[in-house]
Length: 264
Image (cartoon, rainbow, N blue to C red; front, side):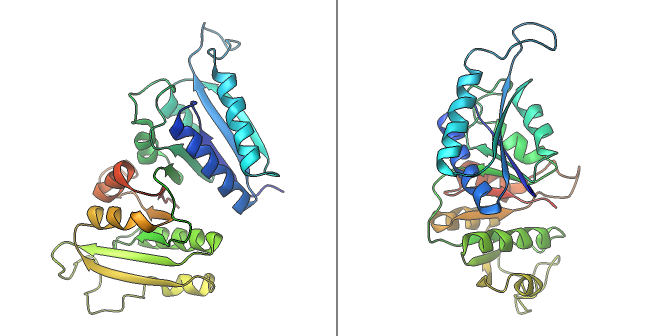
C-alpha cells in the first residue's frame, strides 16, 4: 500500500536529471510512489490538444532513469498543460514532497531560466526539495533552527531525514553579534531543549545543536559543503508561506547540497 507520494518536475535539463535521480532514491527510502511531471503548452486549444514535441521523450527518459536508479519503485508520469510553476504547485498539493532541479526552467514554459525552483519553493503549501550541489555521502543533515515558531517543524523533519539516511544531525542557530535573541533562549540556556522531544522519537539519530555567531544565511551556506541535506523553513511574517527569508533564498542559490524547505 502506497503511503507516500513524491513528485518531481522534469524538462530534460541537467538540473532536472539530477532531481530525478535524487527523487528516485528518496522514493525508495520511503517506499513511496514517484510521479514524474512535465508541463507543456498546447499546440491548439481544447482538452485533446497534444503535448508539445519532445515532451513525451523527456518523460520517457526521466522514467527510465528513475527506474534504473530505484528498481521496484512505482513510477508514473504525467504531461500536464500549462506553465511550469502553477503545474508544479498544483502537483505539490497532493504530494508529500515535491522535488525540482536547481535550474529547472530551461524547457519548462513560463518563467526565465533558474526561477522555477525558487518560485515553487516559495509558494508551495507542502515541502519542497531543490536538488543542487552534491550530497556528501557521509555528511550530516543540517537544520536551520532559528528559535522561531516553525523551528519544531524544521527540526522534526531534519530528524526524519537523518533517520532515513542513518546520518547525524546538526541543528544550527546562528545569531548576528552573538547576543541573546529576544525570540529565543539566551546563549547560556539549554541548547538541547529543541532537540530532546525528537530524540525520543528517533533514538537512533545522533544529534546536537550549535549556537554560533554569524548571519544565518552565510553560516548555513558555508556548512553545506560537507552535508547530505540542509533543512530550513519558510518565514511566517507577512503573507504566510510566501517568503523564504534570507537563509532559504541564499541556500537555493548557493548551497553545496540539496535544500529542503520543510512545511507541516
